[in-house]
Image (cartoon, rainbow, N blue to C red; front, side, top):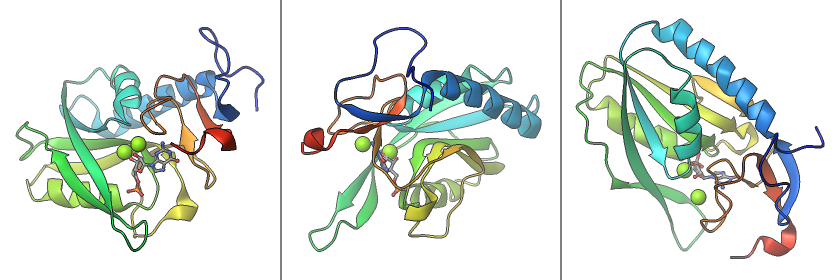
Length: 190
Ligand code: 5GP
Ligand code: MG
Ligand code: MG
C-alpha cells in the first residue's frame, strides 16, 4: 500500500492502524464507477437513494461523476441488535420521500457486510415498483455475507476487518477521514 494516505490535508490520523484504501485510490475507482454507471444508464434519469449516514461521503463524490438527470433521496436504517447474538435486524428510521414508481433507482451504501441492510432496503423499494433497481457500494466484505445478496456495482472488495473513514464511523467518529483504514485496538472500545 502507498505510504501516503492522502494527497493533501491532514496526515494519518493517530488512531488509525493501517490504511486499506488511500485517497487517490478512492478517487480513481469512483471515476471508474462513473464510467460503469454511464454505460448502464446513459442519459436516463436516475434516482439515487443513499443509505445515511455512512454513504454520505461516497454519494457526494459519486453523483458528481454523473451527467444524466439525477434525483437524490436518503434513507436512514438502524440495525437493531438483539440480546442473544449480535444479529442485526434492519429497521427504517427515516424513509425516502421521492416517488420512485417507474423510475430507475440506484441504492448507494458505504459497505456491504452481512447483506441484511441492502436485502431489506431493496425489498422495501421493490414494493414501490421502480422501473429498475440496482445497488452500488464502495466496499464489499464478501467473507461476511449472511444472506444471498450481491451488489451490482462494487468499489473495492476488502478482507473481513472493521474499517473506518470516508463516511464510515466507529461510535460516530472518523467519518471525515479521506481514506479507508482500520483502528488501533486500543481505540476499539467506545
Ligand atoms: P450489513 O447489513 O451488510 O451487515 O451491514 C451494512 C452496514 O453495517 C453498513 O451500511 C455499515 O453501516 C455497517 N458496517 C458493516 N461493516 C462495517 C465496517 O467495517 N465499518 C463500519 N464503520 N461500518 C460497517
Ligand atoms: Mg450503513
Ligand atoms: Mg456506523
